[in-house]
Structures are given as structure tokens and as C-alpha cells.
Image 1 (cartoon, rainbow, N blue to C red):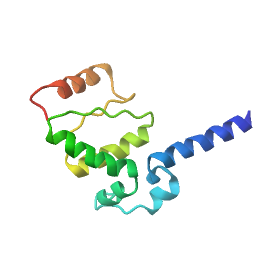
Image 2 (image 1 turned 180 degrees about the horizontal axis):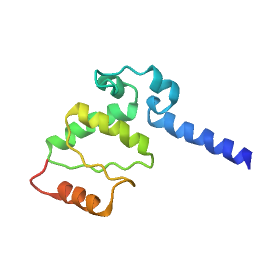
Image 3 (image 1 turned 45 degrees about the vertical axis):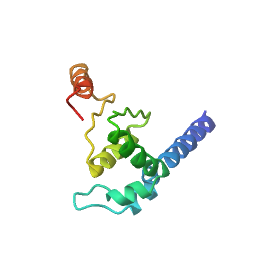
Amino acid sequence: SSGINAEYGIMMELKKCSNHAYLVAAGAQAAPRNKFGGYEGNALIQGSGKLMLLKKMLAKLKSTGHRVLIFSQMRIMLDLLEEFLEFLGYKYERIDGAITGADRQEAIDRFNNKQSN
């Protein structure tokens, strides 16, 4: 049983590493911070090939009028994505397990509103 738990822990750390260096304790501690205590935006983007690619993709998709849904199994990755989107000035709706049914529906309706961008 303890061997399975150790393997699961290793797998979770590898998942974190593959998403962003700041999801691992040592990476988060070494990360440059902004004046509000969040991660410095450019360093946040440079710390992940996925965010560098996503930055380019979002710019292209926005310029052609597309909307984007991003899914993640990890709430801590959603936290980083929020900082990323705020740094780049994108509007977003976050829907995760902490959102109640009514708030969830309101967020979905805002996202689907044709006047929103």
C-alpha cells in the first residue's frame, strides 16, 4: 500500500513538472514575484513551453473572433492560468469544483453571451 502511495506521489509531481515549473515547491519558491505577490508575468510564461505556445495561440484565436475553453484536472494549474490570463489582459470565466450551481450557470451564460469578448 505504501508503495502505491509513493508511486502516486511521484506521478503527481511529474504531472506538475510537465505543466509548469512553479507547480513544484522548489520552482514556486524560486519564482520572481510582482508587487502584489503573484508571479511575474513574463517569467510565468517563460517557465512553461505550454504557456509560451498558449500565448501565441490565444492571440491568433482572439484576432479571428474565436473563444477558447481550457480544461485542467489540476486546480493549481487553473490558479496559474488565471495569473497568466490576467497578465495578458484576457477576460475569462473559471469554473471548477468550488463553484456552486447558480454561479456556474452564470459563468457559462457570460461566456456564451455573443456581446462578450
